[in-house]
Length: 268
Image (cartoon, rainbow, N blue to C red; front, side, top):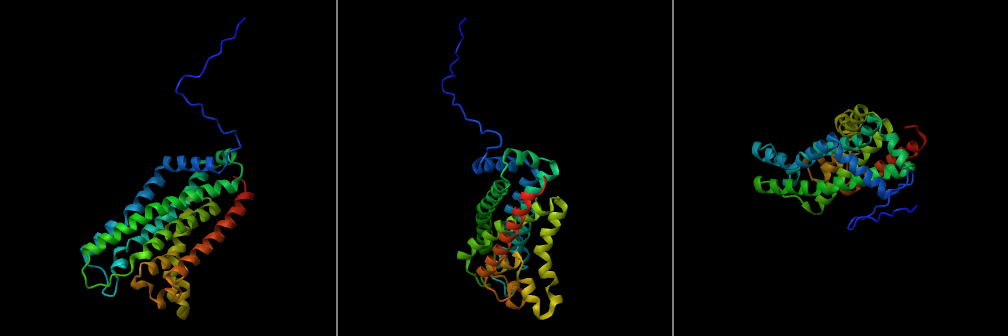
């Protein structure tokens, strides 16, 4: 009895399958990208956050709602603040969506190293947000520069635009940390928006300490980088724009480390 050997068809490449439970960072990153683009919620939030700043600059110019002391850069990027909130919401959705659908169990079964899972989510989110935020904010500035009158100070768009774009992945990673901690979509979204809004809203209640309370939020760092009139030292603290961004990045990193440690221990 002879056995027939079937040769692989010409031109077809055999792909090596990743053994179950042996997926590394590269495979985890590929998994995260597939999940990200398969969810309507993440795609819609990403699209709105990306497209919001430029039409916002048109609206500010059309309504002439820019303050006399405002810079062109600050006025053009007025709608960068709600876009920043959406970036934080996106970070929460990236992880809470998996808990809500129950697919987190499949994720950690495919990639048992939970630190790798969290690192892949954070890397994808940060790279995507920065890659989209930089051209979005630059376009908003160019629109504002073309439409706003010359009575306003120009501001310094470079290198400020790079820092402005960097606030988006920082906010997204903070949302990711909160989402992995709370594991409930509504609660995580409420929490990240509260962190973005409440320091500025509650700051006046603290009297002389207002600038320190308001100055710790990601929105304060954004306002300082846009050289907005709302970023006056008495309102947002005397810490400079770049140190403020580093401060926000620092406590976001601490939040991620704490979340990673908890993520290793908790059941999914």
